[in-house]
Length: 322
Ligand code: ADP
Image (cartoon, rainbow, N blue to C red; front, side, top):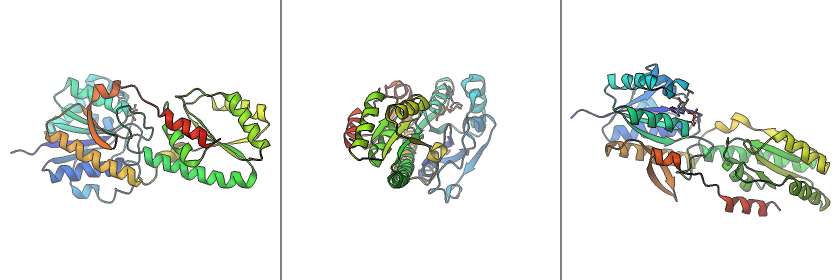
C-alpha cells in the first residue's frame, strides 16, 4: 500500500512550542508509517513550492528551541482561491494529501478555505502566545510567554522595592488579556488591566493614593496591550495621584525563549492527536485541550465559539493585590 504523505507548516505569529510540535508530528507520523514533509515560511512557502521531505533527523536538536525552524510568514495572497489552488497543486504534485498547520485563528481560516474548496485534508494545531482561541483552554506558546513575563515582573519588583517605584508593565495578547491575567496574578501585580473587563481609573488612583498613605510605596500595574490607550491612562493616574509611574514594554521578548515543560507536553500531545486524526481520515479539524483532556473540534465551529475570559481568576487577582 502507498504511504500517506503529510506536510507540516507554521504560520502567523511564531510561538515557543512550535518546534517541539513539528518534531512530535514528524516522529509520531513516521512511527505510524506516514511520509512526512516540511513547508518553509507558512502559506507563502506553500505557494512558492518550498516543500521538502523530512525524516527523524530533520527535527533533531529543536525540542528546546523557541521560534519555528520551518519559519513563519504572513501571506495576504492566501485569502484568494487562485493562490490557494496554486499551493494545493504544489502539494498534489508530490502526492501529499494531508496538511498540518500550526498557528492562530488566521492560520485556521486559511486551512478551512483550503479544505472547503480543494481535495486536501487539513488539521490545525493552535500555536500562539495570545491564548485567544475559544475552543481550547491553552495554545502552544502561552505558558512560555507567561513565564517570560513573570521573569520580567520578578526583576521589576526587585528594583521597584529598592526605589519605592510604581511600575506599569505592558504585555502582549492583542485583544486577549490572558497573558496579563496569568502573569499578573502569579507575579503579585496590584492592578491588571485587560480588554475584557472595564476598569475604573478613579478607583485605581484612589487605591494607589491610599496604598501610599498606608506606607506601601511600590505597586505594579500589568497592562494588556489591547486594554486601552496606555499613555492616556498613565498621565491620568500620575496627575491624580502625583505618583511617578515608570513604563516597561516587553514586546517581542515574549514571543521567544525555550519552551516550558507545559508547552512541550502540549506540543507532544497535540502532535500525536493530529497524526491520529489523519490516520482516521479526518479533515477540517483543530486540536486543543479542555479540562486537561486533548480534544479535537470542527474548525468552523471552533472559530465561531465566543471566547470566555476567566473572570473568577481576574477577581481573585484583584483581591490578592489589595
Ligand atoms: P495567526 O494565524 O497567528 O492568527 P494571521 O492572522 O497573520 O496569524 O494569519 C496567518 C496567515 O493565515 C495569514 O498571513 C494568511 O496567509 C492566512 N489567513 C489569515 N486569514 C485568512 C483568511 N480569512 N482566509 C484565508 N487565509 C487567511
